[in-house]
Structure formats: C-alpha cells, structure tokens
Length: 123
Image (cartoon, rainbow, N blue to C red; front, top):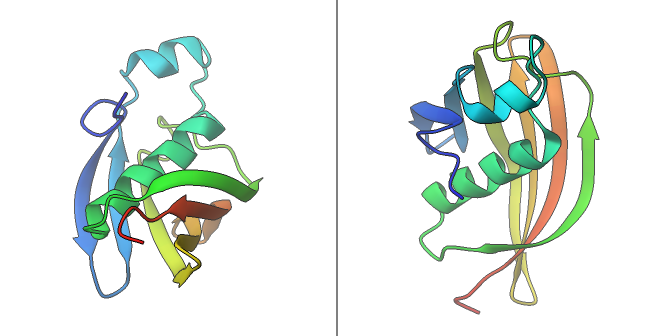
C-alpha cells in the first residue's frame, strides 16, 4: 500500500538538501485506529514514508532490505505536528545496496532517526 496521497502529501522537495516537507493527513484511516482521539504516526509508516520519498529521489527504485536502526525520539501526532521534514543525511552505495541515514524533524524537534539498507535493482 502506498501512503503518498493517503497518509501524507508532499508539500515541497529540495533535491540539493535531499529533503522533503510533507503534510500528514489526520483524517487518514490509519490514524483512526492508531489511536482514536490521540492519533500517533506508527513507526512502520514513518519507515514506509522514508522509503517512498527515497523512491521519489532515486531513479533505480530501491527496495527496503534491512532496518539497521530506528530511533523514535518523539511522537508524531498529526494534530500537533501536521507538517514534518524528512531529510536524507547520507546515501551511499556498497555491494549492490544503498545505505541511507535519515531524520524526521520539525523546527527544533527531531522525531525519528533512521538507518536503512536498500537493495539496488540496478546493481
């Protein structure tokens, strides 16, 4: 299931900074279940959004292979933080894989730090 245009919409992309500003949709059915009255963005959805945004940047359409590290430092409630920024700090190629470090933030708050490994179909 693609979350783009359902759980979130891309507001802007900065190719040089490798970042995306997105707007979360608090009316999405995922938030109705997680959790009624106090919506929280599920960790698996944060990882999926990062993967979808990476696919927006990379023409090779990489596939998630491993979540090396996922630090959820603050809750992302779409009613309190409707817009967040995904920034890809590092993207490197090694042995047919893309190693990616990303953060999810808004202003001075870092919500999530991710270390992900993707299989590169071009390699």
